Length: 185
Image (tube, rainbow, N blue to C red; front, side, top):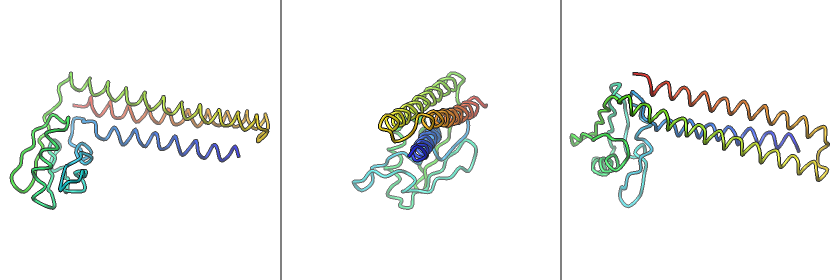
């Protein structure tokens, strides 16, 4: 029983850290990344679809994103979605593809983005601790219901703390790497 709780704890915490990595891909850094636009929702033929389902996204240069839709009729819809997004970039449409030239970030904007990344990392650390708290309460309930012994509870709680520390450290490392990428000129 306790080992099953530990397996679920590992799985839940891994999902949380993976979610952080996925979230931080969409945060702009000094160079172009397809992650900035691939999740943008485009209204196309009455449905909301992500850009990556409508077009090929490539990075021909360090500061340029090229979006080539498979259907040229989607150009306007993709362009509109980019303009509505919070990217702060004006798309250039040549009739076949959309180009996004990413200007270099100002020092002030870099600091804002780094602060935003720090906030997202802290939110994920809180989520990891909440997962830990729920796991501990399950284990205590199991001990109360005589599902596990007191000794097994204590050893499992130490394992839970160790697992939580590992994942909190992973989240912090991911955040530091992204902050370093943002501050890089």
